[in-house]
Amino acid sequence: MIQITNLRKQYASGFVALDDINLTVKKGEILALLGPNGAGKTTLISTICGIVNPTSGTVSVDGFDIIKDYRKTRSLIGLVPQELTTDAFETPFNSLTFSRGLFGLPKNPEKVEQVLKSLSLWDKRDDRIMTLSGGMKRRLLIAKALVHEPQVLFLDEPTAGVDVALRQDMWRMVDGLRSEGVTIVLTTHYIEEAEAIADRIGVINGGKLLLVEDKDLLMARMGQKQLKIELTQAIDTLPAQLAQQGFVVADDKQSIIYHYDKDAPEVDIAALLQVVSSAGLGFKDIHTQQSSLEEIFVDLVERAA
Image (cartoon, rainbow, N blue to C red; front, top):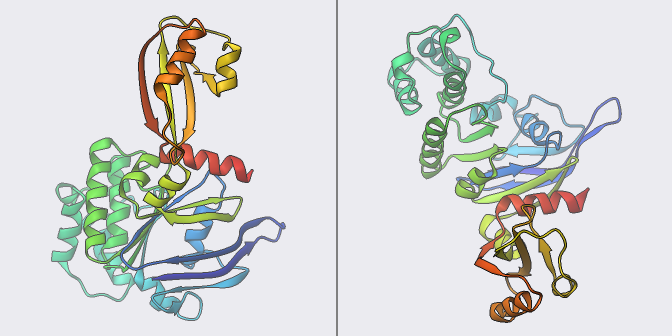
């Protein structure tokens, strides 16, 4: 478990990167941190991992303070950074063996083999790292973070620059780690991934944690539905009676959209279509959809701006 209390990071310039962060991450859960560039996601992860010193506040991992019990907490944590930093002239097998040694663990070729195979790197075990593709180097960073068998894994934009097949391999591995009780905190720009695998969603912006909530509850509470009506002819201006009803013209000019709260009383779609017809507009298709996590995220960030 990770416990963060009143965490603040202010640089000498006066810039506040983290502003009074309070967060509890439960053992065995996947928490996805979402936020625009510069929101504080990487600073938060770096502080928990002991790379950045906090100005004030406390952080504990599995009950151990990250400052007082640095060696213990670092052994509990695996970090996959954004930057591709590897030993160019070393091999993946030797690099993972060395990584285990940094944590005082004995050589374990079977464990190294298992981790490399889980990330489809076994065939490259004796190649120089400098010859690997960008996607394979990204996999190797994940392997280095896992080889000492951490209880908490931080993934900072782990699928950046990675192809679709590898991305799916990674998420299968993440799901397997969760089943083993490993706590996982990830940042990602692929919001559909967070929507697919995360248990809870945290939204951070301007160094402030705007919310942390169960993914399904968040989408149920803040999600909207929309009725999209495809027209037979494009329009530039919405008839006044439709604007009064709350319709808007879609960007493609070929459709009009009506937004409504998902918990609102049942919307009379037939009546809305009658209003459209009476306004002299012909339509050829209609469909409804619920807000995606991406739309909710954008709305939250815009409200906080």
